[in-house]
Length: 276
Image (cartoon, rainbow, N blue to C red; front, side, top):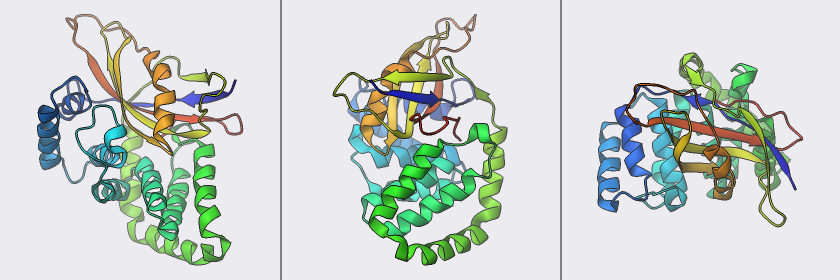
């Protein structure tokens, strides 16, 4: 049996936020496909250009494609790159990581390493309790390095320095804004997941869920949006996310609370910490 430490931050959204409610339709496999597509089209049309979170979610959906819960669209790495690239330039750490994953999938190893190094650089700019897991960062860099080789690293680091010089102010502003956002801490805040013999055991990575909490704080639904480095990581953590709880709220007449949960996980070689 393999134990995997997890730590999960939640980005709090305004009650019944229009964007969040739209995602509850888009990712719900029980909703009609035409309705999910129409809702997504409306969200894309009206998504603010400067909202890193909305850009990140849209890019994640197109990166994952039909492997996301109820996804109404095929995988489209061109759209994913557009949305995630813009989210990254506005301070989304996880968008930087996913840009590296996309470039690696497209066999653009040098670009993948640039994004991975940019990701690693800005991880150090946020408080330790908000950082993505160190194990994922290390494994992402190593997977790219296995294909790129050491010879290309001097030019990569020169390009990284140029990127940081050009975009540093905007990215740091986005990081500060995200750090100030209120977070909710579900229970259990950290957990060890065990996998049955022969079952795929994730090493480290990130999985994004939209979770519907009942008024009593228990989970009604949890829909997977995206997972890196492999969709199987998200599926492996689905049971864990379903076991979360938040403080109960009274007087909500049975209304669900929808929250975005990026679940960060790591093996025993690294300390699991909340992500950004």
